[in-house]
Length: 59
Picture 1 (cartoon, one colour):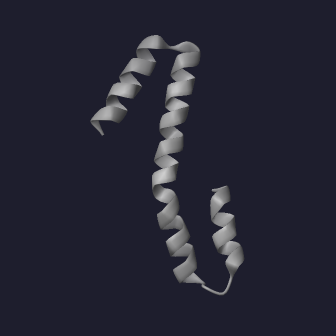
Picture 2 (cartoon, one colour):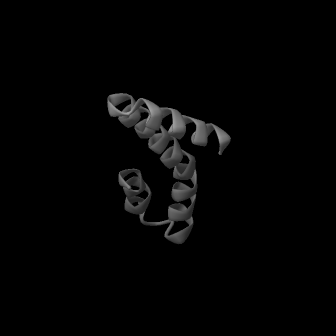
């Protein structure tokens, strides 16, 4: 959490394109942390329907 706060403060200080790039990377990392949980939950909710597992990547 401290790293995210530092990245956010630094990107807000720089503004412009650097702000968008740094916050975009932070958002991608945030989504990737939850991705395995999404796959596990999708597999346990309906293990026969593989479309729910494959569709989890489009969230």
